[in-house]
Length: 172
Image (cartoon, rainbow, N blue to C red):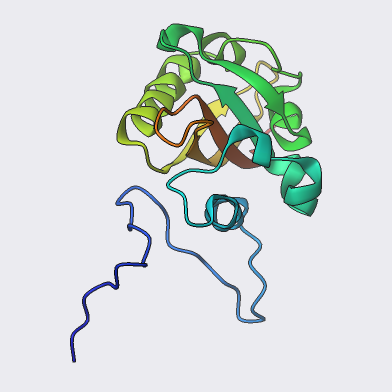
């Protein structure tokens, strides 16, 4: 039997995570849910548009989402929307702040590199890492970046999902 993909099968991006489903059939991971949401919004197109990403369309995923404007100069990429989960991890709202300035320590530079990769590859990029807040709390996080395009060709924004778990330092 031929196992090749049909012409209607969307491309499998090497940096995209597999869809993870719990035994009860309900997907809980924000990254996997966001990837599925992005694919549904795209329909038959290569990318969904930024305008398609709405609170109504996202439902209970909305708090995990963020949108980054992708400009011709990557150093100018900025958050244009940040959900409650990213805000809670950062301790502030990064909306209208440059990506390189919104994240603590060297995380902005590292994250900006991943944003550039998603724009350049025109495909999903998955990330998992950690940073330490000024109060000593370590933030373990997962994120996914998904390209958006208003003209179907040029990536002009990134849809992201973010989830995290705080780990309080011993003795704190």
